[in-house]
View 1 (cartoon, rainbow, N blue to C red):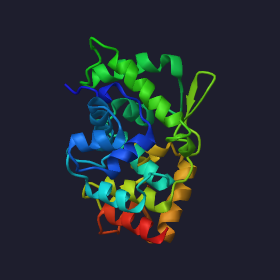
View 2: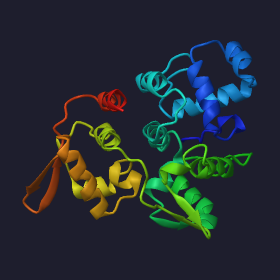
View 3: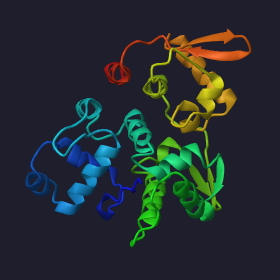
View 4: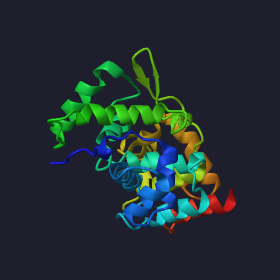
Length: 258
């Protein structure tokens, strides 16, 4: 059974995450001395880095983490923030965020979210019964990060008003970000249907909350860059995936050009 990540009880403060990112690889005592954080906080911030797919172990950054550290070490660019949120939304990293973007729909009640999430989690082998309020804490951490002006609020992954959680048009979605997520979800496929893009958990339609029209416009952006090809096969609207490089190469291309 999957357990949720508690981050040592600490909420997300992005500037603190970047402090640890830029000292990553040093011994814990060096991190503590250089940042002024306690041992528990350092461990909690490393958990965030792992769930953002920026770190693989306590001592190693991922290739994505190395690229972001080199190109945007303070995580100020929308592109970098989107990469963090995307990887944080993986079910094995943050099931609350996974449920929010893939299962909750385009409008949900904030007051009813906790109960709805627990029902979904119980049906999907995710532990919700803890001695401490870990589920409530992760929900709070997630919503606070997504609506914090110093973290991810600008991206407009969600908006909250009058107890309603809604999926507005997201902000700052660069075509190369779309391509990164699309090809990160490729799983060996040479093509994918529009319906799959709209309905597949973690792919660009679900993650960004796109309507069919919005998705169509964004696919045209990718087609103009030669990163997808639109084709009609029988009654299916297909998207061919001609790019043969790694998803990371798309990230490197963005930072090289911007």
